[in-house]
Length: 469
Picture: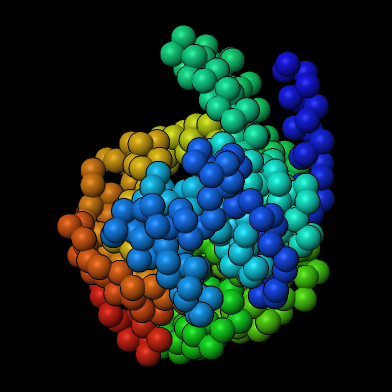
């Protein structure tokens, strides 16, 4: 049984890895329905599979209106938004309906968005729908996407076995086994994400230094930016204006460097318009981290690492790494799928750090009042490594600007207003500052003070907060 499953998984992996770069939405166009039968299985009374409209009629009144809007609204963007809301807020009550819509809707764009929303859920109706789309859908792009979701589901199920074995080694105090298993887990990050990132490119770079420890530093931080949009250009212009008056020593990115998916190679033409034309004029080095959109293309993480050798400013030595600058040590994380090896590395690097200030940055927030809310996985695994040991954790992912109450001595900031469309947010119980705005962050540090300033597109501070020692 295991041998047959492994062979099937390997076949699916090879197929998906060659084509999983199809991450950007296909243009909206009319396609024939995938099937007249909306869901696997049949209605007990009629012997026929119920239609999406039948399923909508059976839903709770508070959900029925939204389900009918998915079917009847002429605004495709609104349909996508409502379907996503149903999937996230009421998955158990709406999944049969959403699967039926996925198999019968005529819009390729809508179906692409729906696969992206529900395709990662390892539920029997979802898997059966994905298998049908992969095997027989008239739209080849959707078939490839469905196949990729199936590959990812299977890989993640297999990685859970590795996680159990890692926990066993930790519980038994098997240090040698834990080291071996953690290295294997590092490899499985690439397998589960479908990337072409060899193990030697995942190895963290050796610690390096940018400025003597007795010198102050001023650092630019921004995330969620590589869209080519007017807001991105305005934020970049604001950075240059601020830099002209108060020069940065260097910059850091908080992930989602490129949309809708990362770069295809170090030679990708988009490097010029989405990055170098806008940020090379600053004349500083920018030390990047990876976001979820940077992982959407199978070659993107490797392309972003290798571009460091071709750019005067872009630097991504490895998916996670650490460096010092003035009185601060920075720890850049890949928060997309943190391996056991990355957790062990971070714990060790923080333990031996002698820096006055410690700043950890990555893409996904630990706490947030934005669309993605708090991250339970990072609260469980990452936060305990930071409490009482790190001063600041700064992230992106939510397209807004936030400052949240500290936990265990760690102060939390979000600077995801680099150019991707902002989203409405409601301040929560942890919010000190929260605004759906474009902008960037500035970190300034000397031996006695570390100040974080959130800056808008007018180059003026919208919020600032000093920490003192």
